[in-house]
Image 1 (cartoon, one colour):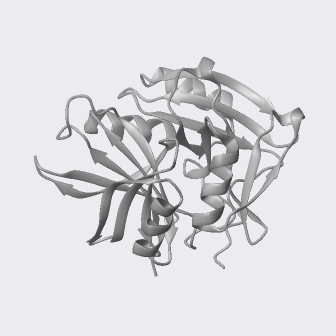
Image 2 (cartoon, one colour; image 1 turned 45 degrees about the vertical axis):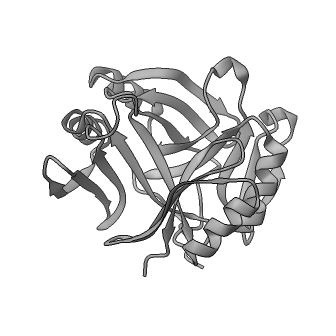
Length: 256
């Protein structure tokens, strides 16, 4: 089992789901990915940690109606100084949409919006060091920000998080860059200007599947839906899905 003990600064460190039906979400993700769940109890607002083989892979929490946001997954980027990162975000044209908040004995979290409108979390760990399983069925394997302003997004994330990016494609039909950490490509930046006008800038989580087509069937059998059918790509077999309350995520075949 590929176990991750540390996360490079600026890289994705954690994911969690805001859901309007916490019980249904646990049933769905347990059936599809074999996750097990443990609630942190009322002191942590009923936050639930999902694990694979006893190691954390994701979090789940109730979607508060006051947030006025659809159910969805959030990616968190690793920072060693959350206050300094928030200051850098605002200086670079982003916004702080949730001020740094301490999670006792776990770490500090904040939510920011980049200059193109994509929302992403920040996590400064103290006792909780993020997801520990990678590149295994049901574990995070990749992340992507699809942005309405590709150039502005690249400039922002390079400036604030120190990303080292590589241009994969640069045509009017398809622009894409990857960001590498310690030589490993962990996320991508896609030009979303070719998408419909109402498509927002958004971060997307990719979960690994040992058999993408079988996992797609499990998704639909357990009340989820197919957003984009499974297809072979130069980056593996991919699919886009939504869970029973509409939270979207992508599947990726396990990379060797």
